[in-house]
Image 1 (cartoon, rainbow, N blue to C red):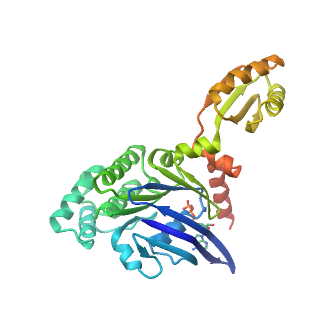
Image 2 (cartoon, rainbow, N blue to C red):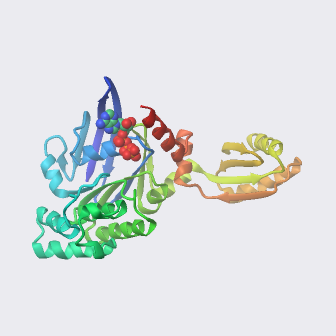
Image 3 (cartoon, rainbow, N blue to C red):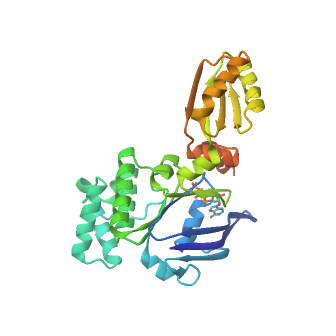
Length: 328
Ligand SMILES: Nc1ncnc2c1ncn2[C@@H]1O[C@H](COP(=O)(O)OP(=O)(O)OP(=O)(O)O)[C@@H](O)[C@H]1O
């Protein structure tokens, strides 16, 4: 469905060349749901815009639905759906008309277009607003109209750029349900970008983690967490000194432990098989006079995966990108 090799894009900014995407290889097979996860500025939108033919790659090759992005852009556009980050719909148009026109543009009959528009309006909780002008809607409502538009013609391949941004929790669920429906009815392939960990975790069968314009890991959320992150153990001790002594103990006696940190009186570390390791570790600490006041073990998240790979959490990386952006 999507195959790229060495796909790259440079931007010229203030006489400097910024390489936003640094030669990435992507393979997405029919029917897959793949999430591109990364912090602000990682290169997600740039990649998506190259794949949907709205931006020319600087280097590399890419085929989408069997066509070359360099030479067959029109054919690609006719076969895909693309829901970008901005508002695509016109301000004065009524929602229903906008959706029906969109369906007609993609070759649906008038009756089919109306039926489909009605169904999507209902799925996204917009039925009572159907005759309102798009310009009068709230940000979240407009986002839902954009998503409905991208789904009108039931594309075989749907690209969604940060689809959940601006949606409330109920509408995130509605979006996930609609994606699920289109996938089971049509075997639709979905490629979405997100910086919401929960979304990548719950929705995607495969996650590609992108940072600084390069794909740094990929796999199912379960695989990534199992191979890259490790279970997180947290132990509360009497005070900071005891927690630091416990960290030294972990370093000496638990060779597989990684990312051990101390904050106030709490020690955190990542290990394989946390449930079996925790009791042994507690006994070990006890034997050297370090008594735990509390202890817990939790399964890793995709944020832990990102932390293991980059030394930053996704949230920190987002904040850093925003600070950089506001200074630049
Ligand atoms: N038109 C442009 N001119 C110069 N630099 C750009 C341009 N568009 C994007 N960039 C830079 O390219 C890099 C990647 O941007 P991109 O929008 O692809 O990231 P992203 O992962 O989609 O981020 P976000 O989550 O914020 O949408 C960033 O450093 C960004 O500042």
